[in-house]
Length: 148
Image (cartoon, rainbow, N blue to C red; front, side, top):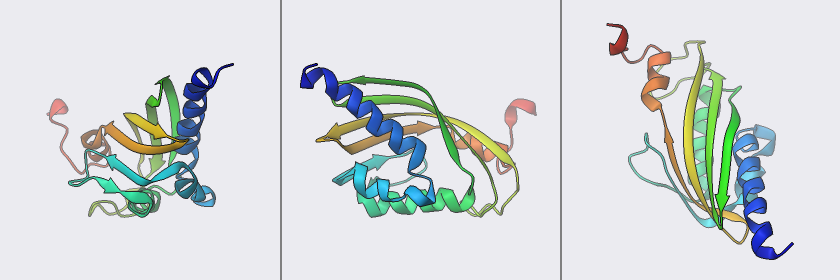
């Protein structure tokens, strides 16, 4: 199989491994292993881009402290060249403070999608879209106007 044909599959495995495993405390080394030096991420709840491995590490620590049992399920993963698109669901129990919200003990489930751009086997850029408002509603931190 030619290198050009293998690369999308290899990129898919890098992204799959990163999403499914990087939030696991025992596998936090994946941040250093799979993110490029000049990594940048764009997420809806962040006012500024997340820059570098340490910036992403802080984001992971924030969510892992709020949801110690956080896990991701990948529904779809599609690649073309050095781009990998993913549809996932994250779930976890809110057992720690998050964005000023005291722990509720509630189990939340949230869907998201992201585009990952890779270079030389490392993720260079991540653009994430997820339902932050839906998560806040599940934590009773925002009114659900649909039921009003």
